[in-house]
Length: 124
Image (cartoon, rainbow, N blue to C red; front, top):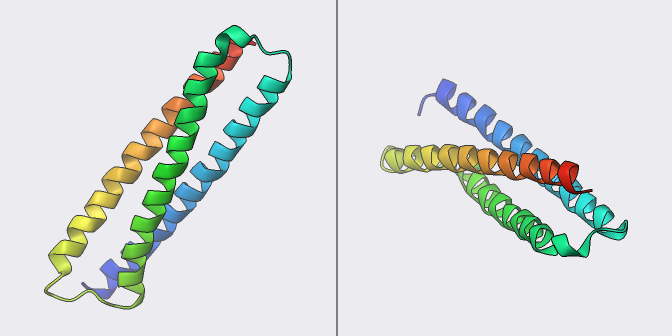
């Protein structure tokens, strides 16, 4: 891999880490909001929907953790300059896989966040 491509990959890794960090912080915020809503005379008949969101927030934590591990693995390869001609194709597939996984996670997270806020707007 050329030095310019390595620099681009380092930049992209940095972007992934910031994006995942934001998603993690926002997920904490959503879980805290859920907790606040439950403390304030919440309609107990809506607990099934609340449990749905709580379960999804927990799943998001798991996805974010897995993605952080994937990013860290690629970062270690780049950091220790372990990209050789033999594993270059494998690295490229790994990078593409992380890109796709982060894209899907971001879309899923945005949807659950929007759905949660819409749900709260309609039910509290």
